[in-house]
Amino acid sequence: MRVNTGRWNTSKDFDELMKNRGIEPMLDGVTEGQGFQWVIDCLTECLPAAEKCGVLLGLENHWGLGRTPEGVLRVVDAIKSPWLQVTMDTGNFLEDPYDKLEKLAPENDPRAAKTYYGGGLWYSLDLDYARIAKMLREQNYRGYVSLEFEGKEDPLVGIPKSIEMLKKAFS
Image (tube, rainbow, N blue to C red; front, side, top):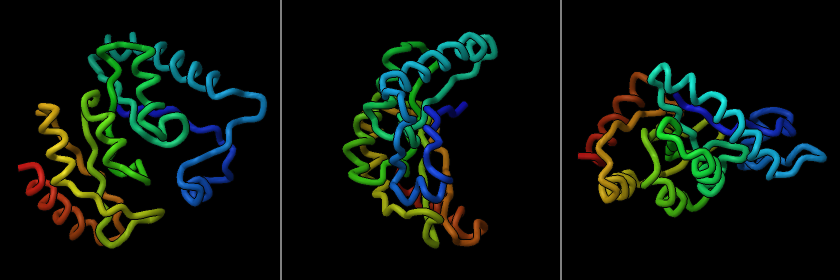
């Protein structure tokens, strides 16, 4: 089950957050360290139920405190549970994605491959999936790669294109 660190909710809406490239000011009077501790405490509280149900929690590199690989790893490393792993979303590092994905590659399961045929709603990334596939092979990854289609193209056209491209890159 995908989880994330949440947001500070100091942006007016998601459009504003995306205009600011996923960077959001912290709440007044709250430190980043307090925010991380809230995330760690909340996920730690969820883990017994996840384990009981056999559900793996995957902390995604998403906005808020999980916007950087260091933020995601700070949470996962603090908890150290086999029931909390990293879910690497290829489309959520807007600048220098490959170096950031490389930092998460050894730690994550599963992976989400994002495509933008027809252009994205808030942004588009031209990701080199052959490079990403090579990075994951070097980490001996043998699991699933899910498709997250965020393009404006008709999904009946864009999704098959995405699947074909990913099959080629990961074969």
